[in-house]
Length: 112
Image (cartoon, rainbow, N blue to C red; front, top):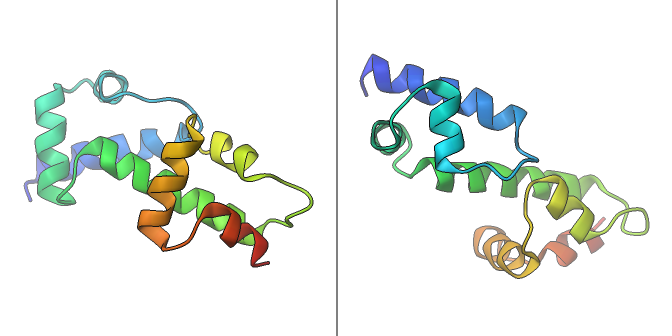
């Protein structure tokens, strides 16, 4: 990986982590770091092998999983956690979560 790609990815990663609860677009990420979309996509592919948006979704899913594992089932809902991590469509959230972790979000929450 080039130094430029690495620096660009670090900048975007920092921005993502401070805005995980917002509905970010690729254009938002590019504007935040002053990059062209194609340049940003190429940098993420070079560093992580996935697009910036796939990386963002993965980070959000992991964050939601950590919170689901730590939560008490009677004090929080899957919907509350999902929206906190920037997921607005529960069907897509559940599908992506199950693909990544092999269980539904509600199964993770109940396993406390």
